Image (tube, rainbow over all chains, first blue to last red; front, side):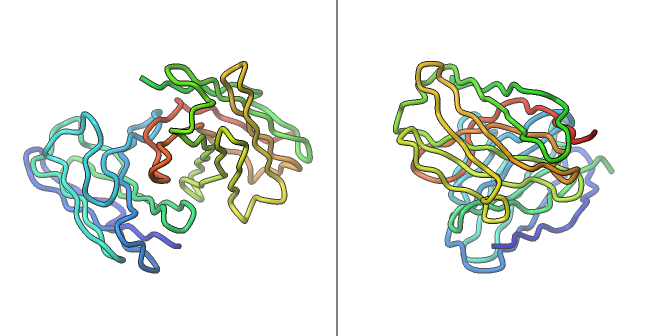
Length: 105
Length: 120
């Protein structure tokens, strides 16, 4: 299953909302996770089952979708949120999207 | 809290075998609550699932690597391992060990990653 993320780069001002998209090449129901990765670090799980926040993830992170279209929203960007974000499906083995870089505008 | 730490050579010669070990702390590797995975990352291909293993020894491998990959669990040492045979420069990557709950193949826990370069 091919995962496609858009946009590749998203320029956002602190305090603004960021909306990231992830599309699956076939239906994955709700078997989707989102990760955040900062330079030199491992990815960190944010969301699983398409919309469930992982332990300790702030409420400003929300996600939705099912089937082939998914969205991650960061309601009010904080300085620590500027990072790379990846989606991953887990209904057909595991595969990751190419990532969206959220950068400071 | 479950923690993972990769170890192994940072440089491997072409055609040889890449061997990495992941040491688990905060949980028993023999627990049926988890699966244990290897992921690699390159600038060209991004994040790539290599495969994962359960404490029972059941393994699942990426079909693109299956002919060259083997994984195992060492229960007394609370470790799991990766072997990737016949490596080429294309196998140069940051290798992460990771773990997740048996309820779904998402990765809740990650090691810090280790850089492995394939070069003569």
